[in-house]
Image (cartoon, rainbow, N blue to C red; front, side):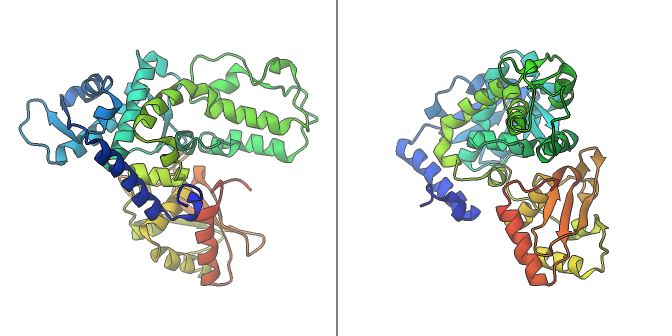
Length: 396
């Protein structure tokens, strides 16, 4: 049942089942302990050199870490510190393996990572580290883009996932699907260099890219515009970083089988890797702006009463739904970032049918909340949105 219909199982039960399967792997083979000795100043190089050639079976052993030149026996604290220190260096901009996109809170493989020698081997190593953290029940302070979580799960990415990278480009694609493109004769199945450079995370070396063979000579029509949008999404979110994705997955699936991780959806995978955040609701409320409502509006008062009763998991889901990630800014919600810089949590009055679901625009940290007629209706609609909305955001 768990593997056949995972969407019917709540996150806590999925996580418990995942942990039991991981323990089974360990207990069946009883691998020898895995010991590494690293220098703090060279934690990435030392860890990479000591772990990259290890057999898969070796990586399943209990990890102990020694920091060279320091006394201390690793009873778990040094291992936790190693994961934190190593992940900080892996995702540092200077390492060139990953780049921040959108609101600078989420990471995506850097298409320019080939400036780093052995970069694909490093991606395999990073995949091993993330999987080892899951295997050991350790949390990492890193949050990936929604599309990268989908790649880990083997789930399909769509043009909706482009919104987190470039909301203007996403709006253009959405406009195409909703309007007649017959009067756009210049639109072909290709992307020009300027367009690629703008979209592909400021990639510096780009060429005219055909989305299909002979694409620069094939016009986009009303009948083929959905194919065009799908191919653009595939290129931006997958093709441009396919070697890096494959390298990461090669290392990741050595420890965590694809069928096991596919229990989770992309939002749950973020919580599994990074943990449930500690959310100060009073801080969030104090740093929320209202458009069309005021703090005294009944719907707003109901909203905060409902959210205050949320579990930690539902609080994390709400944050994911509105901001695109469960990450809480270190300085509190006053430092929440949007696509163009500081952008506070916003609640907009959504017009239209009072029974419609709330929607969100993650690049603006914006929740569109209809004027519900009761607290019970608001609670039911909000919970449905944060649990079931397939895209979770949009300009619809």
